[in-house]
Length: 403
Image (cartoon, rainbow, N blue to C red; front, side, top):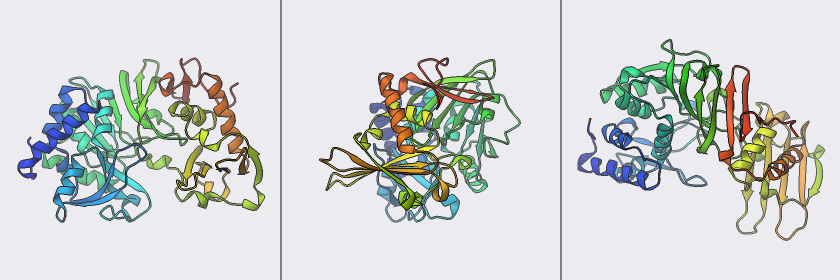
């Protein structure tokens, strides 16, 4: 295949993207460079969508329209930018950004390439992709391994249909299956590799169960506290999968594991009954500890999200700690801590069965006492009995009640 429908500059744009990803360290395998040339991204994207640059802190979203603003559309498609193709499970409008929650996209090329290099499939390997989206990544895998070796699964029937058409239009015919990737599974297992294109907080065991010993699973892990992480697991012959956290990754959550959505203030209830105290700890510390602190707190204090709101003019900041359970907006525990420059103590309010500020602060100090380990010292084990995050060794699993 060669770039199509892009005029004389399409090939140049592909090459420019490849060179940019190489400079950034997101693309190191020459074979994937050839695959990117052979399966151009623009052939899998709609004419109107929402672009979100993949930059630290999150880029500002803007609508793109190939017919009305062609140069802008092409620039977005061939930059390190996520292209939102669905909002609110199809009820919103990605052409304008109208809606509340992004629910499907073509992930930014940089993180796509990083996950593909972590996957590292060998010739003849059978790959299961979970989360087809537009079909672009399935196309990349199909070109490298042969479409007969690739099965891609998508929970949304409408998205699966579009992806199948996108793939067929470029002459690639991997098996496209409708399913959620946790319960129902294709009948052509086992797989040598499992590539997951959405985030989870709890790893579905079928991913391990349907991957042969020596196989590899790569996926984004987003427990809730802080930003997400890349994970690479190796499957052992005893039915477990063990691996480490290997970088950051911000992905949409698996639909069955989504966190409650809405403005932070909408999660506050029974405010008159909240316990009000003060703390000498700067609340911003819980948000700025880095990926190692985030992993430790997420593991020791499960089911909690954090948000930090800042007023650049005054220097004030608000830390929100909210539960992730489905009824969190009406019956969940919450905590709010206010940072005000110049103060020696900071006001903290907490409500609910859990004292989230107290729990998170205790977890932070435990992490601090371990020597402030970074993300690269943490790992994950998944078995039929569940999952465990560990520090340095699988024998050192972390639990909320550990000392």
